[in-house]
Length: 380
Image (cartoon, rainbow, N blue to C red; front, side, top):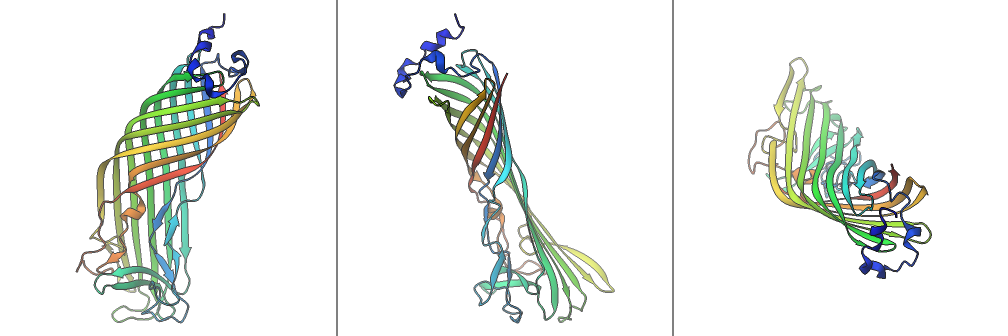
């Protein structure tokens, strides 16, 4: 007698799911095998983050007093004021499964990686500015990067983000029918979400401006980085169904709950080079000044639900291929948008004054990642 014949009578309470094919004709092709490797190519969007307006321009001929200021006639946003970093990108999920001979219990080891992606913006047009809200005047203002009357310059922004996760799960069959089964799993999950924004500008004064002599060069750099580290327990449900045309449906739901350790790091500097004198560097750029520069961390309770559905079929006894969709949600995660304060009380290289902005206040929100997976399962 087949060693798994005893399994054939399990879970008769689920037979109402409606498949009438004989059990000995629909057993998975590698039901007698113990190990499976799932290899998924992922095409996911990490949801991105909503950046404020960071670089603006105005038509040539706009006065220096009005160029690049938000809500002024002719001002347009070149970078920011939109969701950034939400493009589809490649990733990988590798899962090693071990099952007993009857496929009623086992273990899952899984690694997921949405690899680091860079999104770069660069511009050197005749009129460039970085818009801010000036707390001293209570109005919108801007720091000029380039203007035809007296200033040439360029600005560059680089955005990076990546997502990694690892889990180990103990799985147990809780319901079995002729063509359907359901597993319950529990275990541990680790997650890592990293984001970064570097914003820099270089300007050269082509005409003297008060005490600033012609040829003076000034460069500013702002850097924002956020990290999330999640560790917690995880429970999951997996439903599988076999249809008469040889197509398999698999639906997964996982819920992890634990502690998310969030960290934000802010840095900036300004370098001024005066012809015939030399260079000097001071702490702070435009949105990263001494008032908010530093490293900040906070731990909060967080949950990470993940949902997935896959349709697959067998090419041969040991190879199954499929396509599916996944959704992952991460609560109380800090992102770049939470670290940026576009209000300023002074412009570099001025000393802090007034309201002491920009400032940092720990804030967090919900991060969402989703996309397609193309799956291959190898059995041995």
